Amino acid sequence: MAKRRDKIPNIAVLEERFAFVDNETLRKNLAINLQYIIFLIDQEESTELPGPVSYSLFKNLILYTASIVEGIVTYTFKYGIDLGAIDQSRVMKRDTRYRNMREIHKISEVKHVVSGIREKGYEKFNFRRTSFNDVIKAARKARIIDKSLAERIDDLREKRNKIHLASLEIVDDYYDKQEVNDAFALTAEVIDASERYLRSIDEN
Image 1 (cartoon, helix red, strand yellow):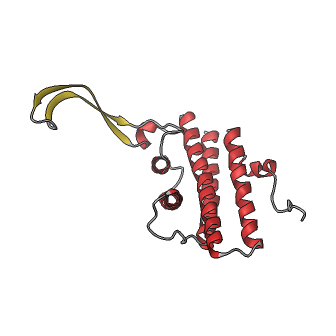
Image 2 (image 1 turned 30 degrees about the vertical axis):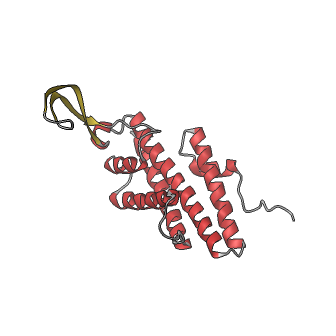
Image 3 (image 1 turned 90 degrees about the horizontal axis):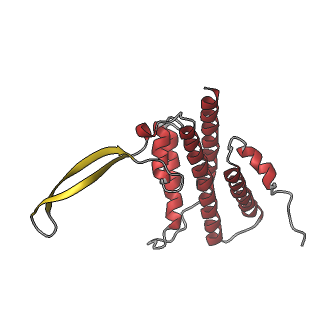
């Protein structure tokens, strides 16, 4: 049987959709994820699949779509920081640190009176370590995305995280085509919002 290639665009073509991403590695990875999403859509539309396989396919679509959204939002946020358009101290999660701590009095094995210096600051953004949840909140504060879009992105993040759970107490079959379509629509809005934001700071 001849292999079908006509419906699956190549990576170079798909990279054009993410032309606003200057990071070549990220742009290529986004295109690879999108190519796999297109492949899964083609499989779902062209093949009669049993229920459990359809559910697994929809979960894969949610997982890879969420990865694209996370990559775009995180890239846009980092770009704003690098250009000085975003002040981390105003948008990142607050942080309290203690230093020069010393014991003054021991009350019990678990209770001690201590003295030291308390410093209030913020968690600095780290591309690898900052959670997507924190990036969503910070991106909203930085006005990359609005409240409604932030809430919907967070909902997609939670759906993606549920897929990773190893100890589900219910049959994991609640993903459907409508949820996938909603995720696709959300992705398009995220791309538009990111492109608008990037254009605005590049023009200033």
